[in-house]
Length: 332
Image (tube, rainbow, N blue to C red; front, side):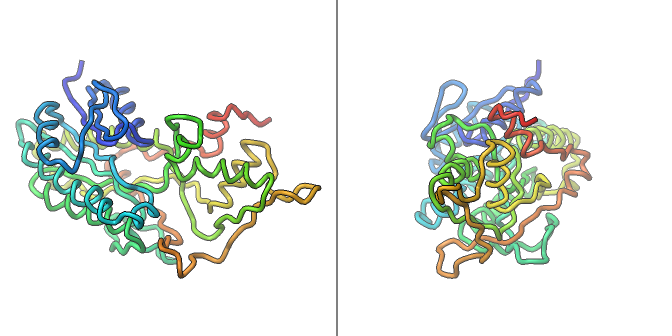
């Protein structure tokens, strides 16, 4: 039985739940933290803005790996409450990284994995795919808070091991099948749009490219990174480890194309107007509204070369096949 322990922040969230499950599958002890959704002893309450509470949690759990999933990850909510978002996404991340680094040593290693985003890049046409070493230039505040979080982790763990893992938009099992559960993912919420389009006209973005990636795959990659980096840290060979990693699926779709796939391939529903003239989804190819509070990038496709160089499995689930299985919609 392993004695290794992983501490996962945001463990009650869409990604955090799958990160916990991935470490449990390889036999690690896991301790999750949450703020609004807790379930002791597996998920304990932790306010990441409370430095003393963070220190106490680390001292009690004595983790070898900390996976930092907790964040305000909805760009519109970041714009609506920038101060709180900066405190959580950037300042709390830096404080956590410093606390982890202060407990890291050659005899008692502690590795930090910070979940970041593809939104650190501008996504201008022709720039993607982005290597991990590409210059960051986020187009919105959400991307800037996560980019600044990366910088904070790199600074705090300069003499130890801290790595940022950039991922794109995620989908996966939600905490419930109702509207509240679906809001956990920007992909899951599109089911509501598909159903609405059966009765009303719905305008959907058909410009920005997305690469929806399974939270189960991201969880597996986090566990593989932890094992790889911890082994190198214990050998004192961490200097040549990359401090930025990127993981993504290759399922390239706009939101309109995602809706079309979910409707036709999973739910068996049309997106065109019905004979009675009701319902329709309209593809919007115009791009960002210059007056919109959040400017979204066009294409932030990530290169996974660094993971490949580490011999970490970058395979991903089929987007459509996963949803067919999830919805029990086996199309013949």
